[in-house]
Length: 312
Image 1 (cartoon, rainbow, N blue to C red):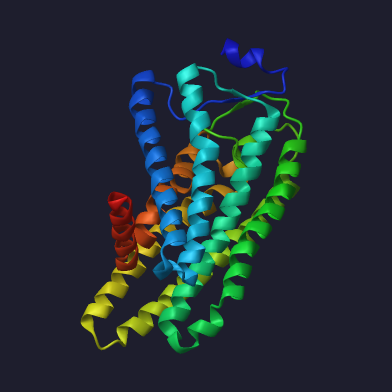
Image 2: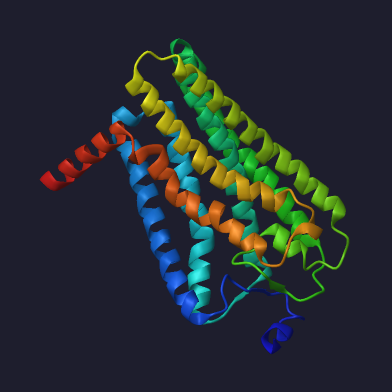
């Protein structure tokens, strides 16, 4: 505890991390590091395939390339610091470093929420209104959807980062988390944060409940349309795709909603950090697999790229 007290009067924070047991930590961090490398490779390959192969120059893959880029940035914002802390034994993070983590994390989380909703709309139009698809999902609409996700996510993040960091932190500066996340930081503030928490709740409605409801509604429509298809093979394929998409979407939004849309008094120590693993580390790894690597066009594009590289 002495180490924690020494930092009480500095502007640095201490990230308590996930585990205290060193043996368990070693196994866990090896696993996290493997996931990190896998995520970077998967998403980089996905972006390169989409850029290089004309078969993937479609609205869905355009949006997916933005999702992959967001996932690369998001996991890179968190895991390298976790690994460095573990290897060095130091758990401190400066106020500026903490602010940057909060800003980038909220930008990418908010942006990804909106982008996933845009992707579900793309699937809805493609399956339920195929004849209108070229009009409803033209290049301009795609650019607005992707650009809007980044811009709205960034603006929301600037507001929340500025607000969260202006609170005085006069209790312990030890954050019971593996990165600087707003709900975990609010617990350290010694002033009433109720008004700000209402703001977080409103943001939660805009970025979490509304997109999640739209995604759910669009997949219900897709499934109803699929049920009317004559081909049992097409039905089976669409059911499989929809169920996988909904699984990864629920895994992303579920813990996120649970963390950000509960009052501070309902948060138990350390609980948020285990929920955060889902939307910060696991879903960036699963997204390329669920959304693309199971797809015939992507596999063909990969074969083409491997052949051209092999021949050269």
